[in-house]
Length: 382
Image 1 (tube, rainbow, N blue to C red):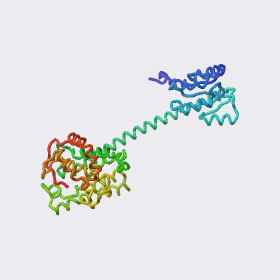
Image 2: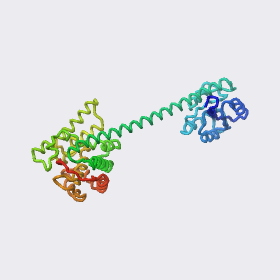
Image 3: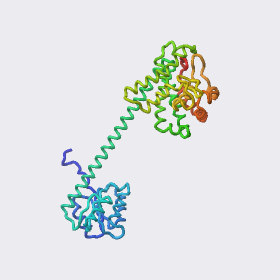
Image 4: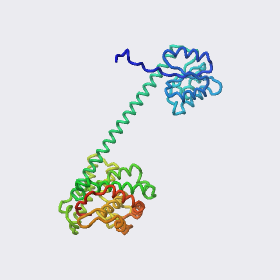
């Protein structure tokens, strides 16, 4: 299609507001060749027409009108989100400096005096229509850029989650928790346990400040890294077919420090920490701590233990209980509840464990949804 045969863009639409019929007739005649025109003979009608005309591009507004004057009409146009971005040019016989200042202060983009000078009128109208068109293009461009950024950010987040799961799955594979048929379901279960617990506790006075929407999302994403330190353990410890003796258990306990140090190395490489790495570091280092101080690696107790680690302690123990290990069969959901109930106030933060029992059916549903399709031989638990 050549340039001559392409359809021309539609004309801009201008609303003329004036209570004098002769002025409306004159303006309509001047503008008709270049623009579509609509008319209103008072402020109230002007507001109605502007609200009902989604393609309105500019308003020529008289000041001295019966009832609602031009200044008040402009104020109301600018206070309505549907009409606030339509440029208003006052066209009036009130031509004192204070009149012009008033017109600009209520939101007009320009102020022209009567009698009308057609060349000046056309120049000002064209200028403000061009500016409005440029603003619209810039707004659309910014919206497109924002969509592109959101899409790419979403892709990066998906890639990040995939890499995190891949790294964590490598550890779980060495630990005997992942095989070809379950595809890291232990990690998925733990993520969902963590989110369910956090959502249950988000309004609790002890946890509300910690469990914001953003932090709950970060806890979900960082949960798979809880045992990342196990990658540093020797195979004869990690894959022992049975319980560890005391000396071996001391070696196993080192995985908490290995995990913390691995994440700290990432923080150093990035030049500082962020909330995601902070939670990953807390969880990997402290989720084996116990409420009464009998855990490891630092024998922390009570509120000394990070909230993220207290949540992970419940999620991790529940999943260990319902999963098969070479030294034990999987416990039923009911058996697991009974065992965990005995740890209230000793192993677990009482309020976190109470939240767990309040949503234990949700844990059972998650365990069923992400169950292992074939039980593999588990490595040594810790």
